[in-house]
Length: 451
Image (cartoon, rainbow, N blue to C red; front, top):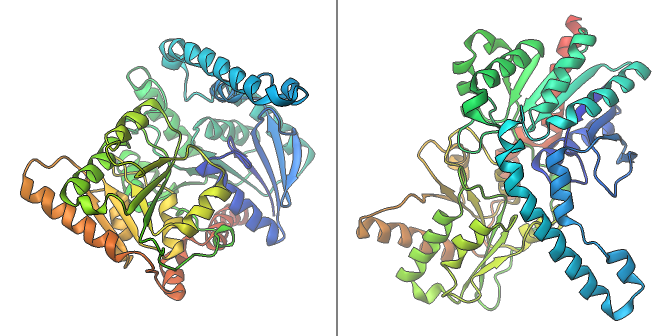
């Protein structure tokens, strides 16, 4: 088969969707298929290249991505390279200047364009993506198309292509809900709620299969679009075992217990405060643990993240904010950590993709949930080394004490523990990248066969 994948964020970008579809595309190539990816261009990357056999075509640059890229620039770095000892100083000054300008632009962006764009902040990528994909479809005969969101703009590109190529099999892969999203909505929900519903209904009706990543969100989609339930399918998150490092099992000689959180915090749907409050509560009850715990956090370090974990400043050496890091660094730490920490969402419909990678290590997992229907709680029910704890505010001291005791016992019992590899493979079998890649390919072939 020859497959065209329309995915705004693709490797080497750091994004859950890039990791998911990078692994699936490479699995297809290993099976002898051809894959062309249309994604956003980023400064410093070539417009065309081949990554592990996958042909990558980069087009345009989303406005928000451009702003984010601007904030990361380091003006003067190249000139400083020839300046010898002053290079670091010049680069640092350039970085501070870029960040200052970025912070000045951001409020105006949110107040104006941020309230008007539709369907999401990547909408400006629609035209260059459609132009690039259309050119590929004129030059080659494709056997299937996959679009992946977030952002939802990718699905609108797919819908436009489907109108021009009605016989092309199409699977639309949806990471997070669009029209009934709560908390961190993709656009101005007050202004566009009805339009969001109509647009998602149109995409579901136009594609052959609309894939979502967990059973809970599948049921919610069936409730919102009962007349289209036949097109709704469950395609789970992936576990790419080939990319995971060897897992250390030894207990640290100094008695340190290293915890790792790798992900994103959002003020609305995944705040950092409950996690920080839980550890403050634990160390007030068990001050003897203060010198043994290390909490390593890999995320975009925003002001609200800093404020949240500042409450743990009385415990020096506890919190280590590493910022956003390449996947290779995260995987190295997955191998070194004693306990992996997942923080759920305030909504029940979104299963963080990292939970599958956590499970693939066989290591103890501390799963912090915001509400009873959290999809990650259900996912870890069959995982022997998981502790799911609600992190909601508890007013009764006796209940806080019970929670702290359960957490302390779990942490002290975790170092050196690991689930046997055969049991891990049974648990994550539906998530193995080869199995997920085959599932999507079968969906495309079913439509191709009907055609």
